[in-house]
Length: 264
Image (cartoon, rainbow, N blue to C red; front, side):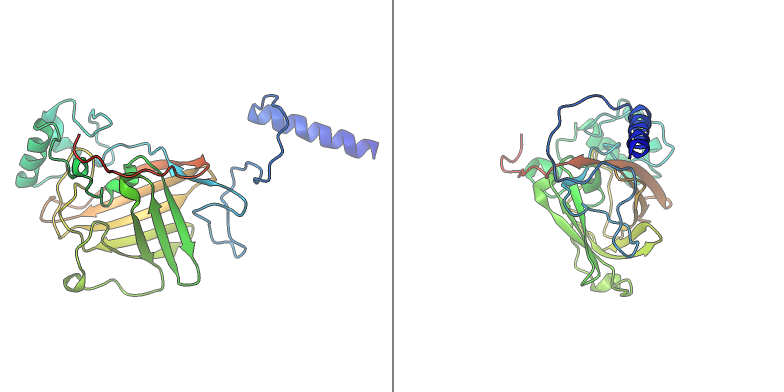
């Protein structure tokens, strides 16, 4: 027993030194112990949401606007470019869409639909503050994305093996119709059927009804969710392009908020 107690003390000291812990008052808690491991179901499938007994959600995105991966452009939290002449560097825009994007920028983004409580849409919702949860319904093979920001919207990703829908048979919406599947630990969602009532990013990048999105959600650790989106809209852009950022796990519940005041 003496040797066992010494062994436990040594392990505790090593863990404390390795994680940089500091003394705290003892507080009773039923929450699971902190871990960097990816939470999983009993069969090994990655959990994108809370583990039993845990509270938390995804928020604090590392990007505030949509921009092609590798682009070096100064932009603020609202998506405003420091230099409007950099607009062509943000994404491979067609001439008409570049002109519209520049107009929105020079206009101070005053026509942003979110000023009038219009839904952020997709993929803008993924960098809108307010948080989100990804609920995996394994009975009906669906994933639900529940959003805290932008009027608490939600979207469904169907993961029941159905074929992608015919674009001519899809009603245009803010989030589109999404069909998904798992690639090892990555949830892949392909979406079509978007309306044009929203800006698909802070800053006003345009899109048309031809927009198709391929999204990849990867939980790299307990606290980090990687998000990558491929934009395919040949009417608006000269080629397909990608953007990526990460979100972070926040303890607690998503705060309730609604857009009720309209234009500022």
